[in-house]
Amino acid sequence: MNITYRIIDNGLYGELDALSSTEVIDHLRNYLGNFLLDAVTGTAYANRLNRTPPEEVGPRIRAWFGYLIRKLVHLQPFHSEIRRIAEQMTGAADPLLPILEKIQIPPRISQKITNLCTQNDIHLRHTILSKIYLQYPYSPALIDLLLLTDLERNIPVGQDWLDLAKVPAPLQPLLQAQILQYAVIQGDYQRAASITENIWPQIEHNEVVLNFVSEAYVRLGDRQKALMALEKSIALDPLQIPMQCRMQQIRDGFTEDKSVLEKNIAIFLYSYNKSELLQKTLRSLAQSHLGNARISVLLNHCTDDSAAAVRAINERYFANAIEVIALPTNIGAPAARNWLLTTEAAERADYVAFLDDDVEIPPHWLTTLLTVLSRTPKAAVAGAKILAPGTPKRLQYLYHNIAVAREDLLRISLDTPTWNYDAGFYDFIRPTTNVMGCCHVLTREAIQTVPSFDIRFSPSQMDDIAHDIDLCLHGFTVMYCGLVECIHYQMSGVGRQTSHDMTKIGNVRGNDVKFFYRFLPHQQALQTMNNLHLVPELPPQHAQRS
Image (tube, rainbow, N blue to C red; front, side):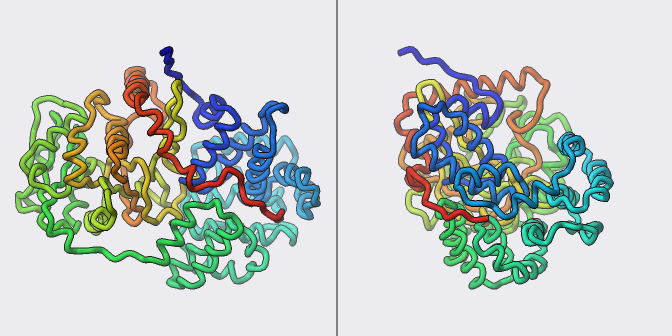
């Protein structure tokens, strides 16, 4: 057997380039089973399908390309090129296209704005955009960028400048719809509801906006209006699997089973030279509903003041109930987990929870995750919705499954949408293949079946993913619970950050190779660990909507 591991760079674009057009469609279907489309991701899929050789283009590719273009019109309502493509595809005139083309910013200024969007200094970006805006107050695309800048600055969008806008009247509802979406992300639900009442006839056929409308009404306590908006949204586009999950969650609600805290529970943390973050984590843990849970902290040869800090917190908040294990060497994350799983606390536990040393959790995290496990047959592990620190809230990690499983390529799905602002759409409970290891709980049966984390992935990265996949291969279920929000301050690996440390890059590359060959014998089983059963072979027919 001639098997060659392939290195794929350039993110999603590189991954899609390594696939045939038919495989790209299945990749898209899997993605739709996980997340809502956003403009960046939708554009990546559309561009790849558009590069299909003419002789390979058939009805299925045309149908999915058409679906993507229709979605992009709603996701980028002021993008004239997308509307032009949609108009050419359908043959139906778009009444807004001539208006958008008439008020386009000069190419020189447009290029300046494009370059400015790469500027990391958000305040400098806002200052320059504001000056350009004074010259072109009629440009909705420019206004949308300013709204996004306000969102990133975490101030009410448009509060200082929006009254100067001179957007043509036919485009006003689209602009108000953008403001509505940003208001929901900022938690200004009353503002979003007020906008909804003013522009309802213009947005009731736009599933993208209806999702935000629904979330605003949920947060305001109007469950009936929230469900009405979601039902309309899903009827317009049944491929919004997350919104189906969200609607079910709103209908069912969730009640904790506090009796789960009567079980034997072990909570494990391990740390290496992160004293300040570890203290933050332990103070957060002290506010949790823990029942009779036993807590152990393993210090991986910490050379900072972690030991003294843990002693002080142990005495102040936990009445010295925390078991502290100090190792003479750093054995890495997988081995640290395994060490903790051999302790007396683990051997007695009905449930084992692992927390990273750089998280903050809400008081109900343990009760909620345990309740999910107790109510789900064959559930082995439950994990939380992971957020980045700061405001507005941004998704850092939700869940994984298998995007591609071939003899030359094994790719895990994206763990969040590219547009990762947290509007509440992923506040639901659902099965998946992998949840984030920084806050997850395992059952006794899971630990007995897969008793260790693979130390070949030391010092960290991918061992928790491999462990969850191993559980799935044994017939267990992995549960994501978006009702628990865990803030994660740092991230392992270099997958989301630029690193110039070649040794770290080498370790990540090495773990990717190990991961590929480790699961190669299970390729056929991995090919079923996706969402293709949730998303049809062809998209539903949509009426053209402007």
